[in-house]
Image 1 (cartoon, rainbow, N blue to C red):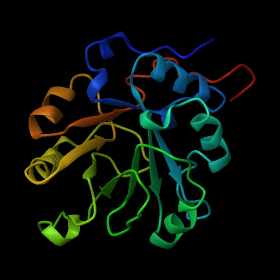
Image 2: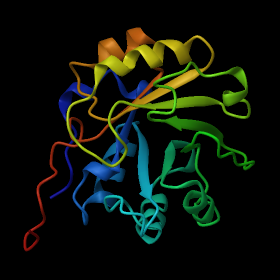
Image 3: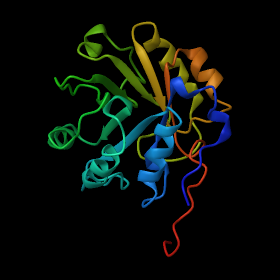
Length: 205
């Protein structure tokens, strides 16, 4: 069975990215194809292995997904320690958008985003924090977790949107999209609320 997209996406494609992490392993390539066919960008979370993080999408699986997605529709989010993320960079295929923990920069010809979680909970970002980035990814949930978005974090979206483009990720739903957009988010990464067929394949737990 091919992966279906929730019908609410119609009319929102230009500011959505579909999170492949939400799809069942074994159906992620199908999910990528469905997103591309709908004109929606594909967002891939790759977690550094052996750091106690949830299992993300491995580099080998990423290569299979990237083979089905035009580079200008592919975004890759590397999650983990600074040293672990730097070690993964050399294995990452060409993409339009590369999301790295803030403080890590890369000089390839792609849009570079600073991914933030709790780095600015206690202090406002300085201009120097954003130097070298094309935008900021604000996580509304701790990276690698699932659940409802913490919409109080939209205050951070408002702060960043006065300076740069902002993407939001983590528990985004159709109901929360208007608030995310009003706060200044230009791109919304959506997983389970968009990829409606996330049930296991036959024979999988």
